[in-house]
Length: 320
Image (tube, rainbow, N blue to C red; front, side, top):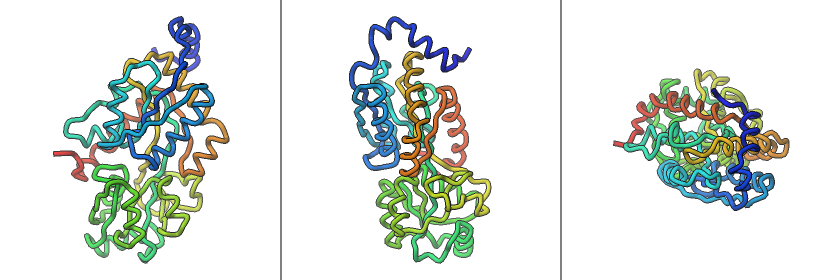
């Protein structure tokens, strides 16, 4: 029988081993399996700062990038299940990577203890300002009129922003040339320079270029508009249906982490994401604060893997 949060918290308080251990009584390591400065790093550090205050121990962020998040995530999977090593999981690391890798380093449904969702992040469709389109619908019309003549950038083959473009091609029936980069930052630079027609990117890492008018934002990829860009329509409002693509940030622990520890971490993260200050800071960064039970997070991972499996195959993103 699934335990409720209240039951788990009661178990935590009544567990002698945890009372003696006094968790947490030393620094917690939070692994971000992506480079510094990206949306996952930005949101991971925001959560780490809040956890430090609430748990009264240092929360040290460690960037261990590589293989669409697999390197850092696998390191956490192999860590002791004692609540002192956690990873910021994403759509890329905990749903797409196992679909893309020839030999996956892990099965995210089996090899981690899900703790809590803490943010959802929309992608945004952007064009170079010199491209004569003002909406996602006009971009689709251009791509249909000139099939194969336009290109788009991404953070790499199989990355969430690459698959956002593949989904656009599939839903709208258009074709464009994909140019993969080592991260979204150099792709945005080429979009600003006019070497790309369009691209998708996560809102937090695209906000600077959007606010500086270096690119023209056309639509967000979520079903509903987002607080960070309230005037920007959704892809579905632009007539591109069905379209729903977003990434998320969530905390995962090593497998076999005791349920009382998971419950305490879940409660701490839920309290943080419910605060007005945290939600406002997340919005300013281009994200939306979120929360979930561990069970709901596990279900999200499963649903995302099923949702994107066909798109990965369409994109030819699986390693050969």
